[in-house]
Length: 74
Picture 1 (spheres, rainbow, N blue to C red):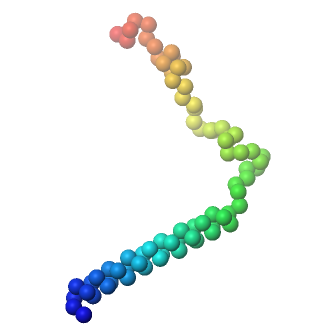
Picture 2 (spheres, rainbow, N blue to C red; picture 1 turned 30 degrees about the vertical axis):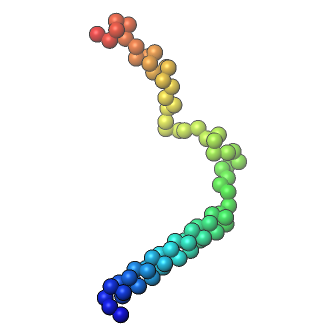
């Protein structure tokens, strides 16, 4: 075999090996995801019911009214 054939063979096996490892990693991820139990909070509420503790909700209408300058911003 010449040098180019050897490099082509190495490249082929590396590509096939990478694809095999990728499929195995994806399968392992899916099995792990299936095995993981659902998250439950202490009160049993959904994640959507949780209110932020340290953040204030921004409402554009309220902020625009509070910062309005009566003389047109001069």
